[in-house]
Amino acid sequence: NKTILLASRPNGVPTQENFAFEVQDVPALQEGHVLLKSLYVSVDPYMRGRMSDAASYVAPYTVGEPITGGIVAEVIDSRNPQFPKGTVVMDRLPWQQYIVHDGSGLSKISPDIAPLSYHLGILGMPGLTAYFGLLHIGDPKPGETVVVSGAAGAVGTVVGQIAKLKGCRVVGVAGSDDKIAYLKEALGFDEAINYKTVGDLKEAMAQACPDGVDVYFDNVGGEISDAVYLKLNKFARIAICGQIAYYNATSAPTGMRVEPILLKKSALMKGFIVSDFAQNFNTAAKDLVTWLKEGKLQYQETISEGFENIPQAFLGLFSGENTGKQLVKVADR
Ligand code: NDP
Image (cartoon, rainbow, N blue to C red; front, top):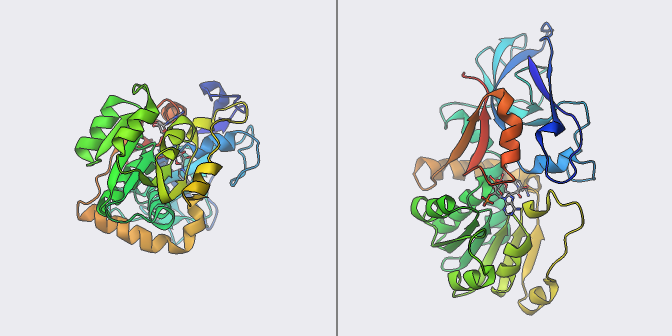
């Protein structure tokens, strides 16, 4: 039974050396416990924050202890009548092939609603993040222009599509020509900008948003955001969802001051964590399932195979290797 531990805290961009593999025996099951087999492991940018020891909204990982994150797993042995053998569950669990668990906090998931992996993506944390950040903070109105950075990722792809559903003009920013083509051709974005090759980002943003920007859903920060801020309309709303451009920074970020623009444009900027909206998760999940079933939302995953490849899949988030939600498939059901 393999486990992945935090071997050391990264300084700057994380590497394989920050992770260590350990092999342990699976202990015998006690009364009330279940044995889980990990099926799909989610790798997410927020985990970079947990690898360092700076205070944040989730506690840091401990050096020498397993990394934890969203996992879909199957009960393969059970001494807990609530979770019979064959049940599929989801929770924040250790990066481990087999996990002994007392059942507390496990959510059951049904393969009838959607493929099991979707519960780590569009029907899980990233989908809910897109839904609440866009609809509750961005509050998009038909005909408005919505810009989303990190547009081709797990959150961004859902943001842009919901904004299209709401009748908006949608502009995405992402880091490869394949991603740009995907956003425009498969997801129906009106415009998409490759921030790595475009040259003058401010000029490109101005061209892509001839009527200005009403809603900015920010996954990234940095120069992409500066270009958007220069195009904000009166009463614009800015949802600060992520700032991945700074997650590996070794000094405090500096750049344009946005306050004079917010003032002149009576704009609202609000950071949020998806759990702020926990009371409304059920309503949101119903909407997302409905839109998926009606074919109004397309969904894309990048799935690596094999437990050994979890660290690499995580590292790839910082070089843009994923389109849509990055997962690792660890075992068949
Ligand atoms: P993604 O699936 O979008 O994966 C990360 C993507 O970010 C990469 O594919 C890459 O795409 C892009 N990226 C990486 N480094 C940079 C950089 N330096 N500058 C610009 N783009 C970069 O991840 P998620 O959709 O899961 O998460 C998106 C954001 O939302 C993250 O910032 C995350 O922390 C945040 N988040 C916040 C939540 C909340 O509750 N507030 C909940 C969930 C996520 P590219 O090829 O375009 O560069």
